[in-house]
Image (tube, rainbow, N blue to C red; front, side, top):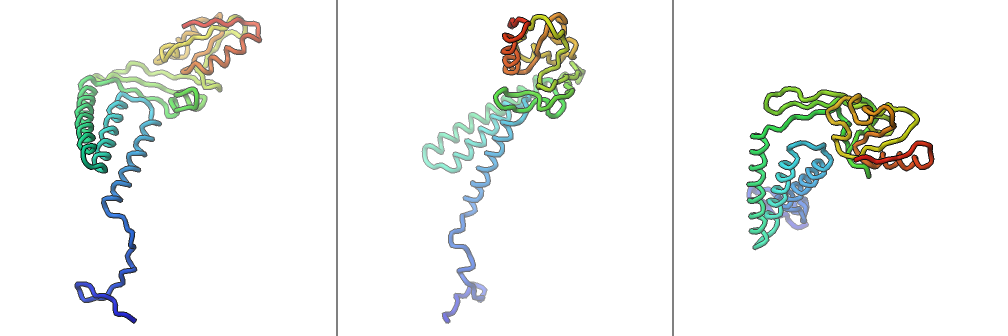
Length: 221
């Protein structure tokens, strides 16, 4: 049997105990960093909107540019170093603008704004969702209301069962952001039937049935 080589301490060791194709420490760090960047991108895409979204996007962009600069060599590396430097300046400027402007703080019941297929962002389940907005500087309450969401995940509208149906198309203002249920546009017109939604898709689905029923459909923007 051949004699095993000895180490510097005089002890014999078997070279086959160590993996022959073990990646270097730098390669392992790069793989971990890549998965971290992908996880951060997925988390940012699925997170609710906030005034700091752009800051987070710029920060992630800078991190990606730094990662690419660490992987590449030559002129491409220099180019991505420049991109990372410019992105860092923009990130710092964005953070400064947010701190100085002190944007309002908005909170809501978990599940009020979730990413839904096709229709985009909207309530995840029916129920009553509390929405609160505070002034960024004084902390005073701008509004503190509840949104009642029906089984179709639209804002609940109590209107007459007969009569013309009017579909209000618009944005969060039309939805009645910051207003109680009784002050939404459809509720202020008790003589009509209405739908209040964060997306036009449910409204279109309901308005398509109007041609087969007695009430007439008209669209108001």
